[in-house]
Amino acid sequence: MRSVTSSRTPAPAGSRGRGAWTVALCWITVMLEGYDLVVLGAIIPTLLKTHHLGMTAGDATTIATLSLVGVAIGAVCVGPLADRLGRRLLLIGSVVVFSLFTILVPLAGSVTMFAVLRLLAGLGLGACMPVSLTMMAEHMPASRRARASTLTMTGYHTGAVITSLLALQVTDDWEILFYVLGVAGFAVAVIQWFRLPESEAFVQARQSTGVPRVPFTELLKPAYLRAGIGIWVASFMGLLLVYGLNTWLPKLMNDAGYPVPTAVTQLLVLNVGGVVGLVLGGFVADRRGIKGTTLGWFGVSVVMLACLSVKMDSDLLLNTVVFLTGVFVFSAQVLVYAYVTNFYPAAVRGTALGSASGIGRIGSIVGPSITGALVTAGIGHPWGFYFFAAIAVLAFLAVLTLPRRAGAEEAPSAPDAPEAPAEGAAATA
Image (cartoon, one colour):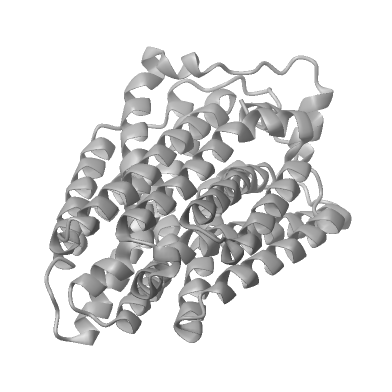
């Protein structure tokens, strides 16, 4: 199968330079999203301890939920907007929007305004990751897309690590975390304006007159339905775990009797594990198979999450368990996306990935909401971790139902069809 940028033909020096800027800027954008989506979890204990704006645990749950609702809406809208405006303009605009409203959060004069600003910031934030992953995929040969996805997502957890480190330094001065993110976001947007090229696949797809848009109903055909259901359930459960843990882990640790600095440190340890797990997961999946690796990752996640329900007197033991939880939980979710890119042929791959991401975003809203309800009821620990372990079991069972053989191999697309333009169109369908 031919692609716009062939892995066999050396690219011109100018193309290599543009590709390097694309990789770097997309990775940094994902890093900003990781920073933002963890920052609330890092400061919730402080907000509740100081009763900022009279905030209660119920208010914190509402704010966390609305933040993710904004992200979900932004993610749903990304396809049509990317078709009209292009990947480049949409990504830059999204970064500007979430940077603007993020920098205004510390100025909120009420809990309601705090929540509204987080919702609006989420609208911009929601488009960042899908567009970044799409641009990365359209700049990579097919043989490296799965590993490219996991490595790109290391940016998310790198951002989370940075948030955790800063949170430990600023203690009660949590406003600094939002100012840093807003300023950094504006700086990135400026660099993107001058250095980020438009996706060549998008440009060629727009120039082509015969590239069809793939309807969602294509995924409901018998050839894809079994895999689709398994992917949607696994994605829902996987993102529920990722967002639930990143939002509430410090509070759950605090409720378990650990002091606030120790609880926030666990968020750092968790996301360091996430970075290691993404690198390791992509490497293992390329060699041992994506389905088997994903099953193993979710299986170990069940054990680690159950272990966190037990109060540990040893800091070393606690750090080890939290680190391993990050290694397996976070990369398991990304491996589900890697399965999508491997299973579906190019003609429907973008639509399949978009549906998995969209349904998964619902899980990202449900997770913090249910965990927040448990915290409000005073049973966040240990029942929050029991809940997470049960969700990991459901994700394991969903992956177990997936066909092992790639759909792209069973029903290959036309061998002479240009792959990248088709993917460029499908990615935003």
